[in-house]
Length: 120
Image (cartoon, rainbow, N blue to C red; front, side, top):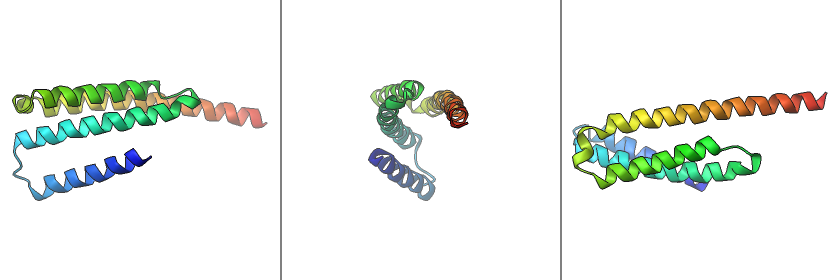
């Protein structure tokens, strides 16, 4: 849980930096996105690890790995990656987040319905 709070603080600082410095260069924004993906990937890995006791979190684990790898790749090619990285990273991140959240919602709904039927 501590990583979620640290991640939230990082996001607030990054958001404030972008709002107050609207003329921030593309290179700085790309570096910020690389750091975001690295931190997000680590946080997702820890959260997926905590869900393993419930038999869930596999897709979140895969999404965390993807975030971490994307962040490292962009950072390793920075500043050359500034021209294409933001659109690519956000598109891939949204894809993985959508799949992991949809899968988690499906399994949670299934778990709740099993729990409700066992109470009867």
